[in-house]
Length: 557
Image (cartoon, one colour):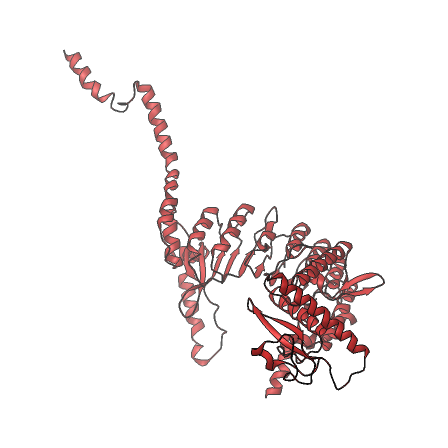
């Protein structure tokens, strides 16, 4: 009985670990598997985090939103959002500050202990530095430096950055970007406020060098810095193609910083090819690269009239044909599709007027005019369509009986046949041919105002069977500091600066771009006393904005 009593007493204890299992050995393995699964299940708890993260509504305060989203994502230690420290003002010695250095030395000597070392390393902890607007304390710029930005952090940024309505710049320096995280970052940019125009990705070398994706046609970036990214000639080729090709052109990027990279002559040639048809980039830095004379000559060539290649000539002809068909579709009497009868009347009137004009040019002008014309205006779709109809003989509109005349507009008839037309700021025009040419010119001006003119459609010059177009005069700043350019490359820039200086004299700056205003060529492989270099400096001195402002200040004083 004792054995029987012991067995029932032992039976409840033994099966307790594996009450739901059949055998003890299986239960132990099952328990181990369950424990291992539970350890692995801890990260999948993060599978519930997107639901919590999506449920959270961002408030627009980056410090609060980022901390809350990181906590919901399972982060226990995450970077803090701090205000970017401003540089100290310049030190001004004075009598009252004579005792301050001694006090600072005492504080430093007292703080040099093992207990204070930990506090000194706070500076090196990962942080998100922000620069705030002085008025409403909204986040204007974000600076992240020295810690790895993973894809999960970018996912958090995609939720907490869009509410920042005044965000203007994002600076990611040495954050360990990869080609994958760069694609995630690029997808984040359209979600941000439209005020975001500046992106800096310095010290983030990528194996595939896919930086050109930042310069897509729909990219909002206007200022891009890619310094110290080990960009070589292949990466420069991708960037040059992103600047412009025959069929596409970047119209938003204003400044591009490619300093401290590995770009050589071939890469400079690719960048120069991108500048051939790009008319948006104003500021370009290629300082601290490996560019020699060949690359310098290619860059200088595109800044003055250059010869079109065969493919560019073919593309220019195609664009001219498209432009001609568009102008023919927008006829001088451009109106909504109306009745065919009115169209026939317009064509007949144009033929009659042109025939009458040619007859008048052959004959000598007389004071008497056997014919008079009265204007008839028809408004359709907000546009005024001008018609000319023959009236009866007589010296004035009141005399004679015209065949067709609008009584409400009879007082607007003219005495002479070369009818005066009051147009916007153009003065009187004579003849129907001049009317048509004026209308075509006005339509061209409107088209040019609404859309950027393709550089291939600019006025060209034919030399010995070759087609030359005006060079890129939109680029204002070019920095080639500390490369490997010799006097051979200087000659190319000297020719460019001389041409642009002569061009700017014949054209006022208000009428359009006039070329480079600043050209940095110092610290290259030539003497500073080189004649070509001194001539370039003399020509560029009056063109620099700083030197231009000084005479104006003197005039005002």
